[in-house]
Length: 436
Image 1 (cartoon, rainbow, N blue to C red):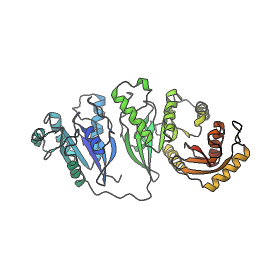
Image 2: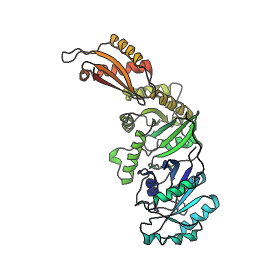
Image 3: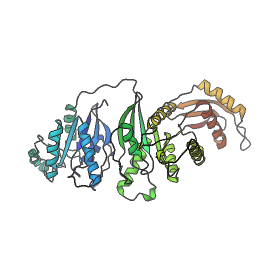
């Protein structure tokens, strides 16, 4: 990873996610008055005056009390500290130093030598004058800011940038592939990433809804850099009750829109559900390439024909999505997870494929000679020529005499012929018609 890492830590409700969002000028992290909203490490790239670093939002650190979820949150925050080049230790200016702040400071002094103590919620000169109390933490001079109103944020970013290590320049030929892992709750998205990276980077529990933010994990495979985005499980809209769940579903949707390829995880024990179909529709409406990964395959009793039978069932249910590749995996055992990334790379490269205009016009002549477009409203339809106007995802433009009269079944025919001749595995493309 070439970008330096800056981790934001502190006890609950000191404004870590608000500072995270303020730095990014975007509401990427969920902010709510409910303690414990941020659970996993949430990664994003921050750019300040041309200097980039990877910012990490963490869950609130509290005293260990035997609660499994709180232990997970604590472990995740400590993981972020250990991998960070710089730690931002946030405290609350209004409440003064607490016992939890003292314990965090004691731990930080043992494990990290580059820390900035930030006194958040210093919204006025009066509050700012009181931050000297935090000197007793032994973490140096507290820096007063207000993430809510933006007070002293620019100066703080200048200080952060000045303390970062020199950045390594990436090679010009590096291509980052953003991959969103989407699916229903508890299909194994976080387990998939943990197994693939060989680290417990994301919280995994049997509790549905454990992942709330969309979390980025950078990972290298086969000489390519991937950004894997673990998203909250997408639920049916009528089941989304809490404000937090509303926003996390929205972020999962944004993760789909911002990815290159989506890995849609299905549960082998449940097959293709109506909710799976809705998620796939969401991916394709965003015009994103996709791979279907059937997880928990290790739990299915099978013989050499089971996968073929399962694939036929999927293709029957998802008839018009038969161009999506299907692979059977186990996030628990790691079965075929590397094959998934090979497939994602193939699909990504397919999405960037460009076909020359001359080749497409030869294709169009052959396609029309096999089956002419049917006349409509007493008018004969003539297709003149064809070109590709976009890649990733591809768009094809066909010029004709009556673009609004081309039958939908004929458009499907052309689409099938394109796939048969040129592939585009896992890639949605569109065909537009325009009057010559």
